[in-house]
Length: 279
Image 1 (tube, helix red, strand yellow):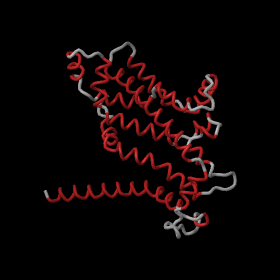
Image 2: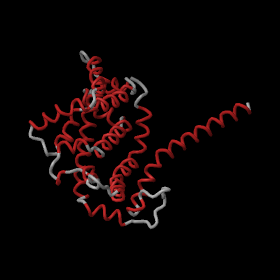
Image 3: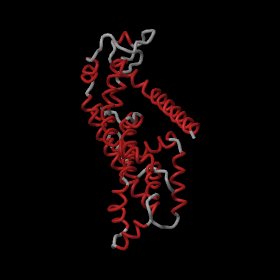
């Protein structure tokens, strides 16, 4: 018995050590970015690497903020990210509920086709989508960056469908006895119960939209419509790059993401754990 307890304790210690090593591997790039943001330009590439700046250049943050219209770029990014997140949550939850709970001809083949679209590289659809957006007169507007989210995504539909499928069928039966139609069942029962899955999809969608660079570069040409990621690229020149200001701006851009994760952390962790239970 004592040998078994000792063996279990060793397994726990090894698991904690591996987890700590993984966490350290993930946090080192962030610490290096923070260190670079507080350095003078001449200290960035010193050898051996200098982790603790001397002196701390806190002025890099104010200089990065004042060098570009950060407030305007941040507002544009926030607008696009919020609209993209709302569109994805609405459209994907509707589609996921239909695939998980409703019965209609061709449901399984159609869901398989939707999943198959996840295997199509974005480079293949990039030019056709651009031609469509330009023909609609949406070039140099924010519309191509958030309107498509209201038509759903394969990943979001799959994620929410897995969560909806894990809920007991008795919920539908009880709601139908009370006289609820399918939309009322979706709105009054499934949405309140799916907060963890919705939070997971919302955080991932917001993060992807906030950090997106390729889409804004393709569709935007006016500086007043640029996003924060395009703004950060201004610190990179053809021959030189101001790494101190670039990292300072990157740290500033992380603030909304950190705040969002802190608010949604509880539901986010639950969503990751629950969305693959059944389906």
